[in-house]
Amino acid sequence: MRTTILTLFPELLDKFLNYSIIKKIIHKKIIKIDIVNFREFSKDRNKRVDDYQYGGGPGMVIALPAIVAAIKKYKKKNSKVILLSPQGKTYTQELAKTYTKCKHLILIAGHYEGFDERILNYVDEVISIGDYVLTGGEVPCMVMVETIARLLEQGISKESLQSETFNENLLDYPIYTKPLNFEGYNVPKVLLSGNHQLINKYRREQQMKKTKKYRNDMYKKYLKEHK
Picture (cartoon, rainbow, N blue to C red):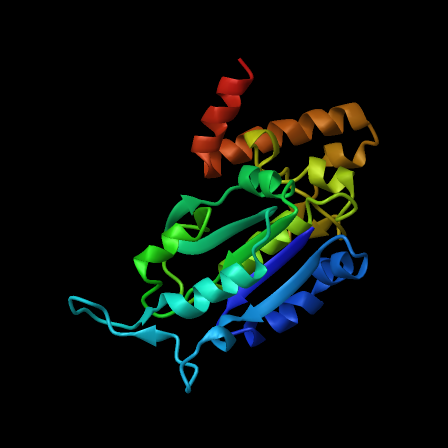
């Protein structure tokens, strides 16, 4: 799989590529990630990519020429172009799974007041990682890359994926390690029993309890799917 990130601040992404799972997946050639500074596509002598809004308003807007030139340079027949914006469809684990089937993703990180609205004519989807506003789109791009990359075959073990939060609309079960007693807080005895049938039953019960408490919306979906 190949991912191209179009950004004005590539240095914000450099360390990300040398981090833990992402570094390993790149090394194994499971995914190829290109970081492109689309400022380089600006024909302005000062490499300017933004301008004032028509109609007036605060902040600068990213103009179309440079970003569209970058999109056209890297887009192929099998590419999916995604604009990261708080105005987009909310990103989920299920969406991450669908994107693992893509041969090539082009992710666009915005800045300032955002892009000229006409950019929507050049992208396939608009995605938001949550109902809040960030300074730029680099963090959302990192979120998408990591969630997708770790789902790719050989990314991480299938056993780890199976027990993760959001599978079956349930949060992950509580986990513990040494010491057995920490300031009066004990590890549940069932986890020490060696009875894996009881342990699995306990963990499922805890998943349901935890999901109901913290994500009742997901819990309702789980109940609906398991009637």
